[in-house]
Amino acid sequence: MASPIRRSARVVFLELPVPGQTVAGGLAVDSESRVLLGVRHDIPGDSTSEVIRLTATGALDPAFGSRGRVALGHGGAVAIELRRPGAIVALGSWSHSAAVTADLPVMAAQLLPGGRLDTTFGKGGELLATTRLPSSGSALDCQGDLLVANSEGVKRFGPDGRLDPTFRTTSIPPVAVGAVTVPATLGEFAFSPSGTIVMGGFAGAFRIPALGSGRSIVRAVAIDRAGNRSRVVVRQVGAARSS
Image (cartoon, rainbow, N blue to C red):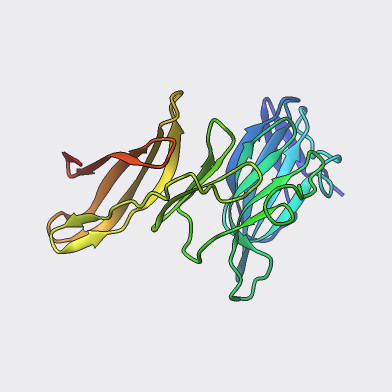
């Protein structure tokens, strides 16, 4: 069997035996220079998510999961964060069954260095969504807490995967453009040394009479460590408005 690894200078090409298209959703490098990839495989009628780890030389790591791969479930692209030495956090949205059920999707999983689920996190190593509304973004902050945003607002979960009751679940106001209201779609996070959380996102390709066709609405929201919203900036067709 041909090796799934091909190297060209400093580029590594993975040839995985999966039909359809593979999309990388996240990348991280650990303290031993091993590369972790969060990927989604789009196959006919389904999508599956997994985490792949490569050694420092670019080979599939046999010490991780099953020959360097850990399957997560059926769902979307996976972002990768490193919380503490060896702990791997996969962020995204996936389920364990391709069938549509009433079960809430998994939005995060914490893996041990060998690829097994860390049972000290969430429920058996996984964190279930608190609502069926899809998350628009998630990230670990400077203290290792997990922040998740969706159209309802932002929630924070501690390192053990429990919902943080001290964090004010911040709602993000929609943007009103004439008679049209555009919901929040915040998916990117940034953190300042002081603990301020800045989220950004946009809504695009809308056909809004007041804006014309194919325009974008860009917004940024800043909240403090307690979850209080301090500033919202919305930019529409070159004009900025703050509140």
